[in-house]
Image (cartoon, rainbow, N blue to C red; front, side, top):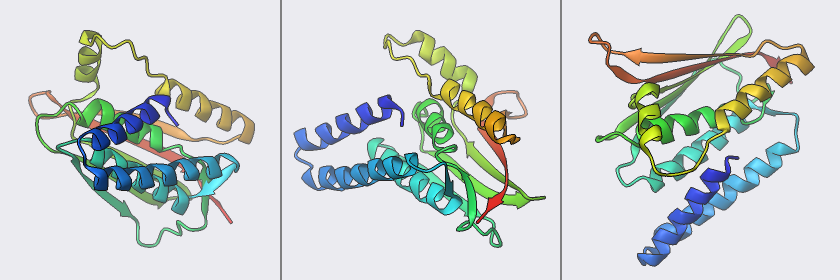
Length: 202
């Protein structure tokens, strides 16, 4: 779990308390504690089911939607014949990419953004797609370079190194693809992440 995310969560709880929004503070704290428990439980296992991964993503995204005043729309689609309760994968592979989409793509929009996550199976490969209509990676980098904050994010580097390690140890072929979406005028209209994982089933 990204330490910066924990910092943001605690600040959100503090904000709800100082503004006397005790109902939101209690709701947020309950979800946050549940998410921490899920992370800790999953960290004890080499693999988790896709069902567990989806539940963690749902809870994480609910917290982020509460944290942003404008919020964002979220859509999850799981292929109807996907046996997600018995598909195993390394834990929390998707969460860092979702966190990146929200905090670097959607948070800087001047409108309500959209985030979608889809899971499907093709030729015994699980394909997970994270799609946002945010500002795009190039614009995000520009804003980051102009920021006076000293926070340095290592999330993407850590997850990339982790995937390389898993592929080496497990002789696996997990693949990631990042697509910078652009409109007909070549203006950025968001980012799409595709993660392909060879399937393991119970």
